[in-house]
Image 1 (cartoon, one colour):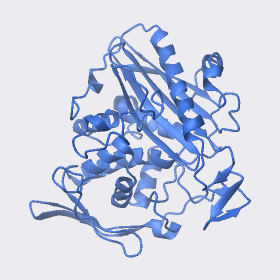
Image 2 (cartoon, helix red, strand yellow):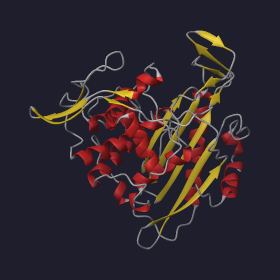
Image 3 (cartoon, one colour):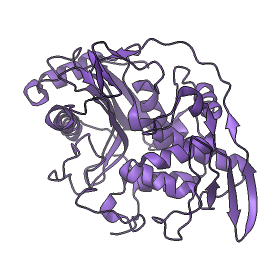
Image 4 (cartoon, one colour):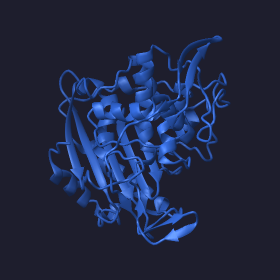
Length: 394
């Protein structure tokens, strides 16, 4: 990523150091990385981007957690278009013995049928793990990674399902799926086995880790875990929000209806959703809004603001990748950040500092950038009509 002016972001955040404590004072300890893109529009409303970064270290590993669900959603839609299938068409999944159960119904859907569209909704609304796993199985491990590499993200490695304890070899295998409508089978994809060879990695974090409830006094080896660079996640989101601004190679082959669908569920709140019907006590409006929202139920975002994003949190790593639009004030920007909050250094004990350090930091980081954007002069006010959505409940 070509960074236009690193000093600007250093200066802006440094002026707000007390609000960003303790992470700002110890970026190496917290494995902090930030990318911020200013967006200006020309007289024809075409976007012009200015990228800023802080402590960006492509070789410094962070666990991407649920952020990998974002490219999964985009690749699944792209594959549907290639197959000539509709995202709302029911998709059924065969079981894979000893690896993954089958799916022939979805009680959370209005029609009780599983579909790519409904899985994507659940991914962006509440970061549903099973929904990701079903997209991973539909795409296939080999196709998933080859597609990302071909789009210009060669260091990406999406190796496994989420929240399912399976071996690397088991995760190479993905279930058969078929699409059916009105009793007629439209397409069937057999079970797949990835033969893709991945470059050897040496990615470690922490001081100790648990294996079968036994504490091992050495760093945890993430080399067989998923990997995504922050710059890649940032650019993947940018390619969806601004599809006309990326090369043909980088672009996802999506329809205008796909974009509208993604914009809706990337920015819609759980309480605005009819299906699935979520309990607002747990799945509140900021449940997946970390930048600015802090995943805090008590935080009130500006009424004209919408955040189109995908966060991820696990093993002490907390990441959010977001496009922020304030329709009332004509403000828009891209912001991505990752931080490691694990003060005791133990991986697998579930005593991470998400609530005490990670969430407050991302909330304040987003707020500092937003406040600066509110003050920033623009030659042309952006026309953001493309991103205004009619939500399920309003």
